[in-house]
Image (cartoon, rainbow, N blue to C red; front, side):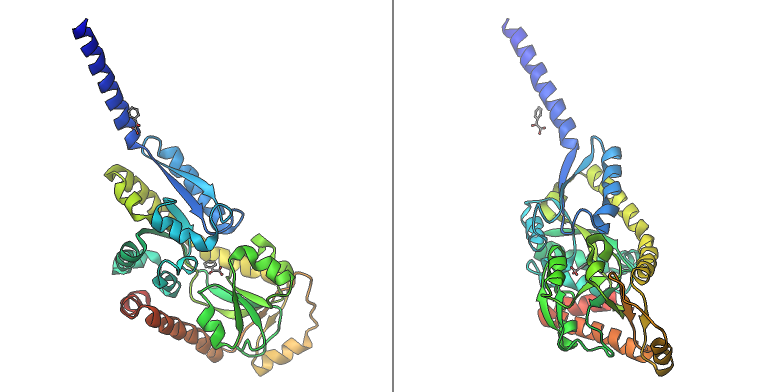
Length: 347
Ligand code: 173
Ligand code: 173
């Protein structure tokens, strides 16, 4: 009897042990997005999550909780830092409250594949680990320059008298262009435009149709500047807790995701065309084009977005100014990291 009990107990312990080991091999990571669920970034991520889950049974699963309604955009970085969520789809501009360096990633001029080779990716992770308690996993958006969208026409790169919606991405640059700036998460842009709280906003070349901002947008100023950074980040202790098999599985899929970033150049071109179609004209400022421009009768449709662009020299100066101001701002916030990153991020 005693012996039988013991055997049963042993069997029970073995069974529990076995099932414990089996369950411990599968981890479920909670993921929240700083961008809305109906936007292009989450749309692009969703099939990837499905694939990770379909192929990752018994190894690793991702539980997509939702977008900014689950955690507000500007609070998500802190939630990753503290482990309230395991993983986030986010941009550095949304978590400068965790570390000012987060916003430096917009200044990269080389592809993420190259960042992985030249030491930039490791340099980023050193800072993200130490200051953010985070692992920087993968950059999922590239080749998406930011633009100024506005309802007030300009004939030179000057935003004097304009109220422009920003995030930290644009603050220094737009202020240098004499704009008055108002910080909001993306979720408040439409209402701000509708109520006339702002005349315009900063946003990448792609995505404005996702939130119907095109209804409230007349002009896009060219050229674009910087490169929109949207990445997957992860709570560092949660990352370190992964088994080798789980980490390797995740890494394989992260690299596959990054390999799909060729999409963004195509998407940028499509979105540019779509803006032109929804709206209309390209405005340029050298004399010949100006005359041709004046000669054209153009009509700004209700969804009309015109492109404001400058001659080549002005465009170059505009873009250079964006980077100069960007790096100067970075150096003010974190001189050592800014210097290290600049050498690794620039062309
Ligand atoms: O997490 C586990 O593995 C767990 O709680 C457990 C432990 C023993 C048996 C079954 C599950
Ligand atoms: O909200 C923003 O304008 C912003 O900072 C951003 C950053 C990356 C991608 C899209 C928007």
